Length: 442
Image (cartoon, rainbow, N blue to C red; front, side):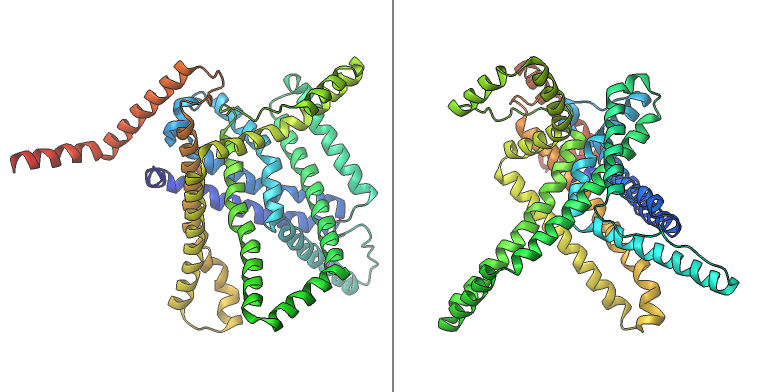
């Protein structure tokens, strides 16, 4: 199915990927230009770079939506234009939190901030040189500024969160374009919170690395290696495998989770039921709380749960898909990344040796752009096909919102009909019939 999706949709996938990359670049340039005059203005514009990339990711996944037979059997794509726009808006809002989390873990968030600071500092420097040449006084206070946890940044986070909450509460009374503002506010407060959390974790990690226990552990590793070299090699191998396993497993599963958030608003796998004496006591104590307090806790729970529930359902869906399906997906994901690295090596060999400043500084960006143009459509199709396969593995289980077994049987029949139609469209069935006729006549 993946090859069929790729053949049918690769032009749209390439267009959306290029649009997202260009939007990210232009947003950073705009934020840096404004940041050279006003730090607050630059920081407020910086989340647009993340939103540009998020829009492209959501669009690339939704482009493949009509070709996903199993998901279409359970939840057909909306036909009405207004309903499609509403579906896109809901997917975008749901994906902001997990996307920015993955964006930050992979280091893209820090890269955006660093690129913003370079552009803003360049603008500030140009202004200073212009002031020197014109023999005027230039006040650069309040410009550029690296992101720190200060009162004004806290105010921005609180106001953005409050604005997003207000839109959710009164969205029916607001015009449709207010959804764009709500999406921006959601990205703004999550962007700032994710950046500051990442900075705090970096400081904690640096503090741990300087503790005496880590020095003792390093000395123990050295002593083990000196005592018996194979033990030292084994230690290093285990340490490397554990470090690589986190990257190899986390990245593909994180992207599959994001796909589950985007696609999975109508797919509800049966969750884990919490039971036990501790849970029962907690429920009894919750029931004894004042009604007003319980109402406030419900409001808070729905606010937090509304963001985390799609993520949890996507994780459950992967869990129900089984280790063989998910393991195969992780392996194929790693092979696609390996293909990307191989393409980079091949390109450098084809171009040959050239001067760094006369050639590579100018040609590196457009030349190596060919790599993501090959890798990104393949990666997106793999993610979509894997999600569709997890849904197919669950047809017959309570994956449809109603949980009705008759509806599950109908979904299975729709999948079979869709697969047969896709095969006929690709000429597979005709080829098989021709081959059998040939055997008979032979």
